[in-house]
Structures are given as C-alpha cells and as structure tokens.
Length: 330
Image (cartoon, rainbow, N blue to C red; front, side):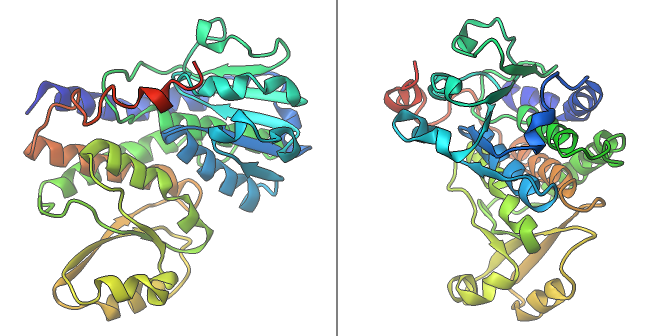
C-alpha cells in the first residue's frame, strides 16, 4: 500500500473525532440572523458541494430563504441581490474564495466557515463585523481529496441553520460521530469485495434528498481520478437513465435511509436483469443526517479500494496545470 493511501485512511478514520469536536464547539456570536432574512451560500470544489447540501436542508427542513451561487458569480454579477446574508465555505481559503471576500461588504451579514484562523493572511478583506467560525480541524494538504473538512463544514453549517431558525439542537447531534464511525467500517468492508473494474457506479436516492448527492460524486472523482458517477432520483431513472444502462451490466449504489419514499426500491429492483447489481448503503438516521453516514460509507469504499489498487495520491493528474483558473482570486 502506498504511504499516501495509508495517510488518507488515517485521516478518514479520524473523521468521527473531528465531527465530535465540531459538534461540541461553541457557536460563534452573531449567527441568529441567518433565520430572519435571505441567505446566499457559496464555495468552490467540495465546499460548493457542501453549500448545495446546506441549501437543500435550509430550504426543505428549516424553511429558510436560501440560494446558492458559484464563486464565478462574484467576478461580475450583482450578487447582493441574491441574499442579505452571505455564507462562504472554504476549508483552506483557496485563492478563489477571495473573490467572495472582495464582495463581502455588499451584504448586511457575512459568515465565513473555514479551518483557517481569522487572522490568516488569506482572510484579508473579511469585514470587521463579519463572523468567522474557525473549525477545530487538522490540515488535509497534500492530496486532491478531502475526507474530514467537507463533512465537518456541513455539520457546522447545519448547526448554524438550526440555531438561526430558532430550533433546538438536533437530537442526532450527540450520536452522529459514532454513527459515522460505524458507517466508515461498513464502507471499508464493502471495499474488500468491490469489483476493481467498476470505476464509477450511479448513485440513487429518493425525495428531496436525491438533490444532496453532489459531494459523493465529487469525492469519487477526486479520489479515483475518474469521471464523477451520475446521481439520480430513483423514480427519475425510468424517465431516461434506464434507456442507457438497461442493456448492459451495471452496478448501482442505493443510498437508503429510514425515511425513504415507500415502495420505490423494490420497484427498481424488479427492473434489473441478472447481470445488474443494486448495492445498498443503508443509513440508520433520517435525512439530512443520513447524508453523513452515506458520505462515510462511500469514502470508506473509495479509500478501501485504494488499499487493493494503490496509487500515489500526491501525484494527481493535471497537478499545477490548473493555475490559470485556480488562482484567479489571487
């Protein structure tokens, strides 16, 4: 096994402890206003995936007026029309995160969620009145993929949302780290028999939760350096995707949870041929908390397969060639 895979697995196995720290960290001052006005989320890479997840939770679970924009919108668009509060997610304050910092004074309230300190030079431009939540996270430099920061950031943002909406702390909060730890073990166990020729598998879910799967596809892309797998609502597969993969062998990942839309999974299974396989990733918690279990299961699968087909994760394709876009905000 390559040393970089060993290190990535170590970081992954430390994920429950990182989530426990974020779950117990005091909420920063000045975030109650998130529930009283409109909110704009932004981020880049995995942070943008977290922003899309948070956007769905704020809208469907917390009934907060929310939208999301990619960081490229901050180059020229009138972003201040999209929300009264800006929530910027950036684990390491990448250069392009500064595109949003440069526009921060156009908003009545700004929240930066990051693993960096407020006095980090990369946070220059953050207004004095802005809220900076510096999460208690270890560094994850050296690899393209991140296994702690995205989930820790998502947990922090959900805590901000529940507080801003005037909701009590979720009952799932104390048990979440242990649930994620168990999910990691499930993913690592699945990796032991995962067919190495299956390089990408469509990810399926039900209900509004099916709109929250972007991070899983992104993690697959950045960990295995392949095209991200498609993400589909189970019912939607009969209206297009089925036409693509019905004639051929296919492995599908079913992201199941206790609050699934009833009866859809058996109907999907009835459509499959003997050459097709539906692999279930079962969460024990309902949405949105199932998302953390599913992410851990999937990351366990991805990292566990690398133990069988090791690669030097520090030498990702295209390294350094992304500077024209990656450093736009610098």
